[in-house]
Length: 307
Image (cartoon, rainbow, N blue to C red):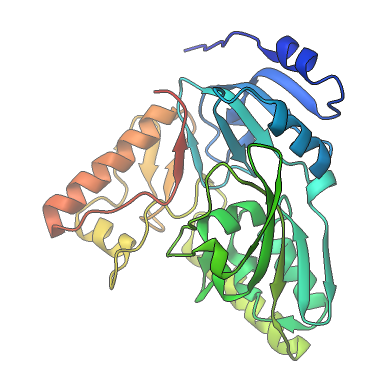
């Protein structure tokens, strides 16, 4: 199925003569996601910097939907594509990291793994868990990303972001209203940077912990497959993968999508899956788990676009 949206980029460019970032019409989002599925974005915008992002959002027609994509590691794009505007922050403009004392500063496009590496190089402990999260800082802020016993809320000092009206906002840890795998900040905020505080720690201890995190990923997760990371949130007091396994879903297939044999809270694209295949498989797993255990699994992976 080939989807093409009306090209609105000429109108946007005319309304924003000072825009410095790049606007692309009908850009394939499958190229930007780990699953490698899904239709196009009507408009893909890559801002030149924070001021350019603010300029764009302030002048963008309110009726246009906006969604932010990082490295696409926790995302299913549906086959009908994404109407409106998809914003992607480039590492060149939003990917810097630095450390001073026990604080790490990072742009929203910086990889979580890079935050851990920057902290380790400065003997800052407490951020090793980021080494096992295959996403960006922006996604970590939005989802309170966590792994291996740590969460974003444990180390965040403050985050900055741009509102739909182009206004810059700063959010302290309490302002983020973190809960398990989510934050309470207005979804229209586009995060641009964050500051994290750890603790000065022995360098060898930090590296040992990071090695543990990496070993766990390599031995327990299908990281070399086209996947999207953990599919469902862990229910209180339980593990999603155990419920999925007990419901007989390990290895289950729908079209080109499959529940991973290695870790059954991971879905994989075996080569020719569609967005519909992957989402249908996930919903099938949810239904079978509900029937087997009475527990309803909730999606951790984000799903966007038209079916």
